[in-house]
Each structure stands twice: as structure tokens, then as C-alpha cells.
Amino acid sequence: MANLASDFVGIKSPNPFWLASAPPTDKEYNVRRAYEAGWGGVVWKTLGSEGPPVVNVNGPRYGAVWGADRRLLGLNNIELITDRPLEVNLREIKSVKRDYPDRALVISLMVPCDEESWKDILKRIEDTGADGVELNFGCPHGMAERGMGSAVGQVPEYIEMVTRWVKQYSRMPCIVKLTPNITDIRRPAEAAKRGGADAVSLINTINSITSVNLDAFSPEPMIDGKGTHGGYCGPAVKPIALNMVAEIARSPETRGLPISGIGGVTTWRDAAEFLALGAGNVQVCTAAMTYGFKVVQEMISGLSQYLDDKGMSLGDLIGRAVPNVTDWQYLNLNYVTKAKIDPDLCIKCGRCYAACEDTSHQAILMKEGRVFEVNDAECVACNLCVDTCPVDGCITMEQLPKGAVDPRTGRVVGDYANWTTHPNNPAARAAE
Image: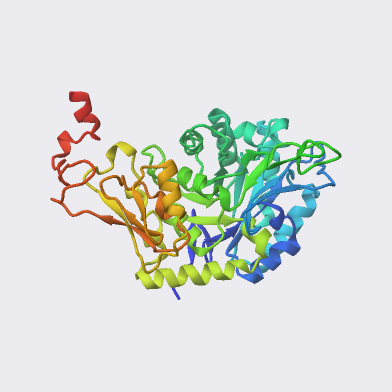
């Protein structure tokens, strides 16, 4: 099996799979079980200062979005940071780290936005043996209303200021956890880098209401007839997370800043995609809450097999796709494809025909006997037929060779041979 040993900003772990700061990492019992199941590291559920007590609700804390087969697509949570005493958490962290020295253990922190509060809590965690700290600048509910969480993460100046405090008063690597509830994820990442952060992690949860009870007319989860916005996570947020990770990885201002990828990682494939887009490791929560801690074993074996099959190392995979992430204006207009339907695989359901006829370009013909064919003269290669077809591989997009004539436009493939005159080239447009 491929060697999955990870070194993330000097924090070593046997594999790049960490449990994210969340209910699964709330106490010693859970973390020990996680390590025994195979997790390479954990980020301990967010600790706060010994100020006003944190009191969680005693009713439902999670809302859900399901697929048609009731597969869990997303969780919405209204749980706050840990409500367990700080000293108890610190004692348990020290005990766990002593017994599992080869596993990563990072402490998530959230305290009021003043220098003394951060100085105090950093002093108190120094002797736990923890490998690093993660600054929780992301929670969109509860703590944000108290001037913490995403209330800090949405203001780059605050991120830079607090990160500087942490680097001043702590010897440990500092990971800044970013909120996705912002217009441009690059700005807070840049602020974290200016403040001296060793890495960023993202995404934290997305502000959301997952459903409304249409009898009680209240958002769910519902507490005594009332509901509130919460943080959304799980497979449904993965596309948003991948984009934000890629934006930081390819931005000149943050290129090279280590990234811990979070957001809907459920399988080894999900993890591989985050790694390919620049993440140095991944953090997981919803998958563990859905399937249990042993889900990591599939991730480990799957990623190892993939790397072996590709003849790659873990380091080879990290960032491999970043050079291929570009802006729309740089896409190649010489690349032309057309949809092709395999008649042997087609089950004659007609979904491709309905989708194309009603909502796209009327490029699929239905002939006698419900035989479906593509009319190349109308096909713009939008891929909708591929996406709606229930049979994997039945419809594919086939590239037209250079020199062929596109029957839709009449243009010879390769017309835009000179990039300087390519209409996607900003310089060419400016010259016009």
C-alpha cells in the first residue's frame, strides 16, 4: 500500500485523514475510539474561555437534507462550542496525546476578540502536548451573535490581528479556520497569511435553514416552537468547498499557504479531489457522524490503492490539479465535442430527450421504437444529457478532430489557431 504518512506544517500523522472539530471530537472517549479506528488526527472540539457559560439547547440540534433514497446529503447544526469545563478538556487532551504520540491532535479555540483572552487560553493549553491550534473563525450561529466565530472571520482585519496574537503567545503551529459566509474567500486567507498563520482550513459551515415545519410554521430543528439558522455541512457543500480551496491554492497572494480541506469528504475520492486542488490533508465530520468512525478505513485503503495504480506518492497528488484551474476567459474555443448515445446501453427512458427538447437545444431526436439519436447540427455539447442519463457511460461527449467542420457553426475546428486573436484572450479584446 502507498505510504500515506503526512507532515502538515510540521504536524505528523500516519495518514492525511483528520476528524474536524465537531461533536465527534468532544471528549476523550470519542477521540480514543477514533484513533483506534485509524484516523490520522483530530481537531478537538472548540474550547472557549472560562467566561460566560456555554449552554447548548436540550432539544434537536440537527436538521437534515436527504436524497430520494434518504441518503443524508447535508446536516444543519445549531450546536455551540463545547459546554464541558475547560480544565476537563485540557486534562483529557493531555491524556490522549500521551497515549497516542504518533497521531495529530490540534485544539480548536474560540474566545472573545481581545488580546488578554487569547493570551490567557494559549498559556493554559501549552502543557497539553497538543500539536497545534486551529482558530475557529467560522461558526455562523450562537457564537457569532456574541462577537466570535464568523463575526471575526468575516472581517480580515480581525483575522490578521488575532492571528498575530496567537503567533506571539504560542509556540504551536497555527491553523486559521475560514468561514465560507463571505463574498471572496481569498481576502480572509490573505489576512491569515499576513498575521503569520502556518495554514488555513476550510470550509467551516454555511449559514442555512434546511427546512420549515409546515404545521408549526417554524424552521427546523425546532425548539419549543421556534427555530434558528445554523451551520450546513455534509456532501452537499463539497462543490463550494472545492472551489474555495482552489481559489486560495491558485491565488498569487496565497499560493503556497498550506490548506486543510474540509467540506463533504465522504469517500477516498472526495479526499483525493481536495488534495489534487491543493489541500495538504482533509478533515471529516458528517461522514463519521453518518457511518461511524470506521469509515476512515475505506478512505485509507481507497486512497492507497489509487496512488499505487497511478504510480504516485501522496506528495505527487497534492496540488496536481491546481495548474488546470483557470478563469472562463482562458478556456479553449478550439475544443469542440458532440454527444454520442450508445444504443446498446440505452434503456429508452427518454430522459435525455425530454431534458434537451424542453430546456436546451433540441439536439436529440426520438425515432420510431424510442430510438434516440443526437443531431450534431444542434448539439452545443452542454453535457445535460450526460448528467440526466441514469445509465453510466451510455451518453458520452466525443471530441471533433482538428480540421473537422462543426455542423452547428460551420466553423473549422482549430480556426482560433493564433491565441493573440482568440476572442477569449483579454488582450485581444482590449485591442479591439
